[in-house]
Image (cartoon, rainbow, N blue to C red; front, top):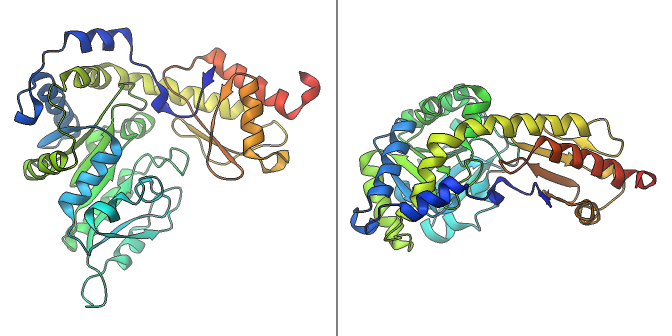
Length: 344
């Protein structure tokens, strides 16, 4: 089965498994796990931040950032299709007691002028703006790279209003590889950053949050409150080190395969490529096929292809380090067969 549902389906390499077995461990809640400490040091240096913290997931990392930055009753500004808004079970409201203010973006990027206009707090009837969130790459926009120039303008606005900026950088390294811009250049326009080790980077578990030493000090307590203290966590951190040191370069191949898939599908009658493929995500509109997404996905599955749905007419493919050029060719052929049964 060719699994293109997400880059979270990647399996740890043999080198990662060996590193997990051999990892030197200690109690991370006491700060005594040397492998976790090493991972956090590497991550902080890579992002150009003072400190970093290993957390169980990207969602947990984003929630910790919101809990550190915000007070109950405040408002958080983010793009209308941000993962934090649409796919994290309203956790910011449930845990941090804040509400979300969404802004329509252009391919996932908020207009700085819209951000500034959305900042509130002087009127006693309004909530104070406690945080601005940016997502890069932007999942719902098809893995779109938010330019550092856009982030810089928003960051400058945030500083004028004394409001922190958090970056949901679950696929930040995809943005870096696609743009050939170091992750530090994205991270420097933020007060905190989250990125996933378990997506395209291929580790089995975990994410990193990074920021100032004071931010991480507070984040560590919130991680404890949320049940995220993992004790001898070096067995999970060890593959994360390999992910950062060796797997970033593999993202370029994921992007190449995504573009090849889009190119192979774009001329097939009955489908429309919805996004400019910049990284590893392809969004396909199947409206013209006169099939439901459920039927389409089931027919693809019959041909050995797994994909995900992004709504009633949109299918999402995500290339990952388990995919080969031969797999891409098989997916294109499967589409042709689904849309032209006479080819079967």
